[in-house]
Image (tube, rainbow, N blue to C red; front, side, top):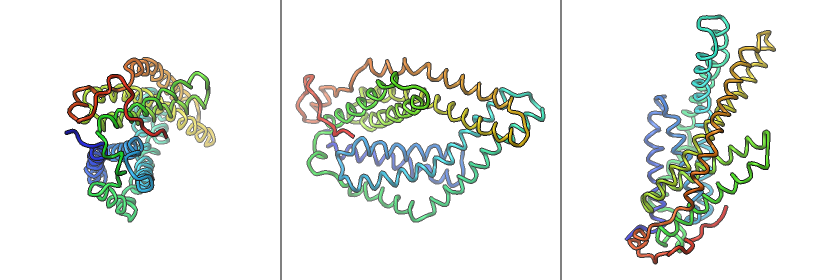
Length: 319
């Protein structure tokens, strides 16, 4: 028999917990990409917890989610500085002349400043990992593995039917937000694109958590959501990089420096943002084209659940 919905969800959360704990030693050693890996694991945990929240008691789930949000924020300060340092280094390399005073000054103002921010943020990460709050989070994750606060009725239902409803709700959330894009502009449009990206990421993670239960249908849907997330992530990185460069340009001008080279880099990031966004319609269209994830009849049969025959799956409570 296929696992119950509660058991399958706890297994998915346990796998993400393992990812988080496995990254911790590397973060402490400041290994390359380690902060990113731990941050992703933390975000995955929080996202899956939110998508599958109808299986758990509300208060302990909300409390765990809040602590995961805190940890993701601490890690995010370091990761964002790391990303900007790498991005700025590439921009300086591509858009200024080698060996010139201008390039050296630009590198100092952009790249070294972000590396200094990363060093400070990484120190804050280490302080957090050594603190009581992280120790309490670590212990709470262990408790969720040994005795998760499952709701006694819904969590005992067959996982395939419950998971299908959850994926349907996450997909509906994404397409609803995407449908509003043509009605907004300017800064509001940029923020909506960011929200669409977060919804795509949530759908991706909920699909990946359901892959063992549902199979290839969920895996394929997760890949389509990942594509939407990726192109909008590239867009967001370029937008935020451009904004940071413009701030540095103002600082340089205030110090008596020239803004011209910064304007050149800002234009490059504007082009990068447009290039990334141009890929979004096709990625979204492909996601919409395939419709909702449906549990194959053979999976339902294995689970001991009645075949849906096109009927609606088990509903998921809306956010």
